Length: 414
Image (cartoon, rainbow, N blue to C red; front, top):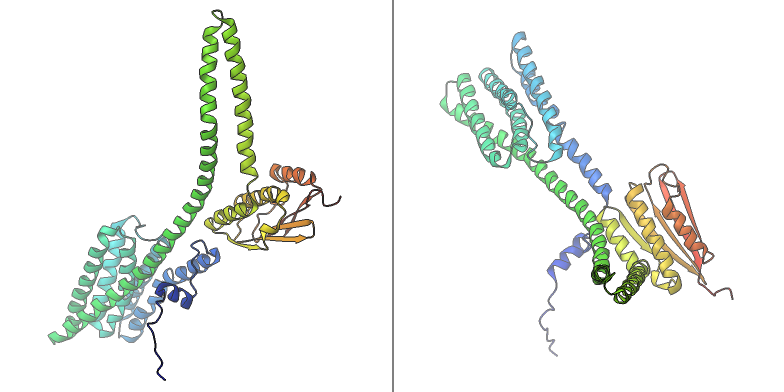
């Protein structure tokens, strides 16, 4: 018996990779705490760099046979390089291109580092260790420079390091190959320092751009909802208001000439105004009475676009239809409070149904102090819930804040 093996079913390589590494398809799945941890990691990777790299010139000072005045001068040069490089490293937390002022002073400090490296090499070949500090300082300058100058500065700093390495080592030994050897390694060390610093800053700059885009997307989500409501109101009321204006002008012209026609036009204006008022209420009522699952989807989109990780527990579709507009208003008010009155990183919306009674809890993990005070929004919610024998409560325990609403389906007690 022969087994016939057909062609393998095609598989989605992108989905296979996502499943393998645990990447989700949800573009709003974002935990702000990850950004805080990454910021802390990047800070410790950049700001203390010059202090740690100062150990290499210190090794040269301890190893070479320098006189006391030479040690003092070279130690002061190391101190100046570390102080200037550390101050500039703080600016790197803003991303690429946030260059410091006083370019002449910054260039003088970098030139001092090159000069110290050349002098150290002329006294002892372990002076090559100075190239590590010089490379780190060069990487900071390249990262802070405008984009059009970065490659020029990187190449220029590498070439200068090679020249200084060749001159310093040649002064130490008569063999010409020694100068070429140390020039090559000085250039390599400086290039590695530049690549290391700019690589970290490049990654952090991308993170900053993505975070700014995420903040803008949250604002756009809110603006999009406002524009939708404004467009609905304009589309419905534009015709009525235009007709009212035209008939009011016509009635004004007919007064004194044809009073009967003027009264007829005035009556039509009044009817159009009543129609406009009725349709406005219908628009607002439709906006407020949208289905609860739709409200939840909109609230989750807005919160996660603002960086608040949102979790929905329970099935909102199980809430009785008469109660859905009521709890939709609760979700809207709770979402607004989270955006305005908290620094929340995580929000939970929980739905439970026990017979005719439904309970909804909205909780977040970082409410501002005093955010449990009732505002006009919560007061309005309490009034609406009271009409259905429901209640709205707020609880705050430290930074943890809960908005709780419960109500029974109308007619369930009869």
